[in-house]
Every structure is written in C-alpha cells, then in structure tokens.
Image 1 (tube, helix red, strand yellow):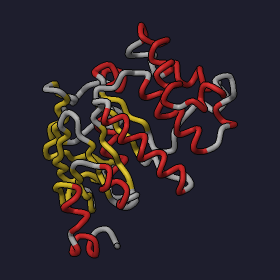
Image 2 (image 1 turned 180 degrees about the horizontal axis):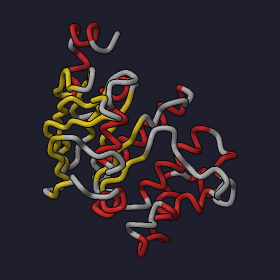
Image 3 (image 1 turned 60 degrees about the vertical axis):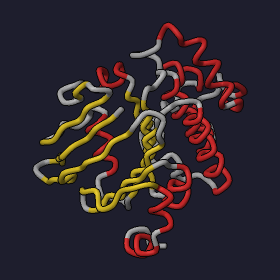
Length: 233
C-alpha cells in the first residue's frame, strides 16, 4: 500500500527526516514509534502533502505521492487523522463528520455516516451538539469518524491516545484493532509503546529522523536490549 524510501524533509533549512525507509502492506497495522521531536508528525505531514519532501520516494498503491496536493492525497484514499484531533469546535458533530466526505466518498455520505454512528453510538446521541463541548475521548471519536467518512484505503492515526484516560486508551486500541480486522490498513504513529506493539503487525522506531530499528512488533516488544535502549522500559 505504502512504500517510503530515503525520505528527507524539514523546515527552514533544518533537516528533520534524514532518510526514512518504511512500508505498509495491505491488512497491516504498522506502528511508528518514538519520542517527541524525532520526526513522526513531520513524516505524516509529508505523506499527506502538507509539507514537501526534499528527497526520497513515496509510493501509495503504486502511485507516486510526490507533487500531489493534500486534496489529491485524500482523493487517492490516504487519510490522515492528525495529532490533537483538529476538529471544528463550533460546528456540530454531524457537520464535522460530513466534512470528512468533502473530497472523497461524497455519494456514500449517508451510508458512511450510519457506519460511523454504529461504530461510535455516543456520536449519534450527540450529533447536533457542538463538537468543542465534547469530552476528549468523544472528540477523538469525531476525528477518527471524520477519517472513516472518506472511505480510507490507508488510515494514518497520529497520537490517537494522547490525553485520554487509561480506560479510554484501552477502548481506542480496541477500536483500532476492530477497524483493522474489517480490512483497513492502519499506520499508527504513537508514543504509547506497549499497547502499540501489542496491536501492531510490525513496528518502526524513529530516532533523530531515521529508522533506528524495525521488525515484527512481538519480537521488538520482547527484545530486552531494545526495551532498555529505545523504549525506556
């Protein structure tokens, strides 16, 4: 689904990504892990067309991503749920969700809205409520639901557990696994190492703008040297 090779990017002449290599296959959950400032969000911005790459190659389902606008990336089916939710607080829950189908899957808006409500029953109860008045967990549901409205072929989730209570974090990871079980490939970009490795098929650990380690998630989780050196466990 996604192939990234030698990706370099940054801001104002400062290089943040220094040659990233990674891939996501159909049906996988891929975890991209690392602490703040290592380049995870920069990677997501480049993949989404928000930030231009300085070098490297990005292919999505055999099609180059370089040079595509954010709208064209969305139309291709690569959907990014950003860190911090980025919902529209003064708009209703339903209006926020419907915006997810603005550039893709507009004809299926009503059916997809029902799918989102079936996944998140609380959003049906609050469909007319201003999204900014929801709890943090409910706002995250809106953000993911908005992504689902575009019928993603690959869903990038940037820090979906950030700021949630432990119980809601458990629910969030259960949801991620359920969406994947229904056939949706997911690239999970997280700081929550333990639960990300439990959910993922494979994982990439980023340090200083490069992939420091990668491999099967279970093997990485069980590696004592890795846990000490990279995960702080």
